[in-house]
Length: 73
Image 1: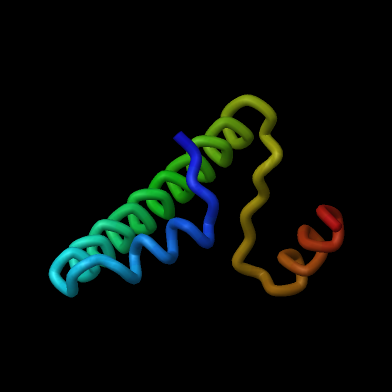
Image 2 (image 1 turned 30 degrees about the horizontal axis):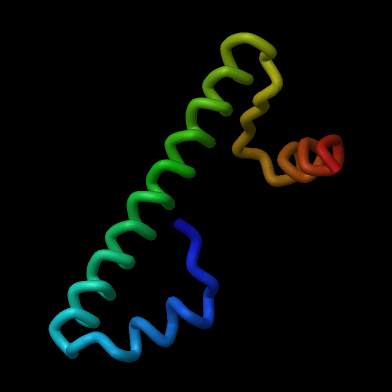
């Protein structure tokens, strides 16, 4: 079932205050979960590149880091 954005907003406006607060809390939790998942997926991708493709480069030297960044761009 798909609801248009404006209908959804209108339905939210008609909720009671406790329901709106609960919805807000749920949305915040969903956003946190999604961000965590994105971080984890990026970690897996980086790990794969490190182990299989050996694309990751590390350095504590600022000049070397600038060269690495320029290579990527």
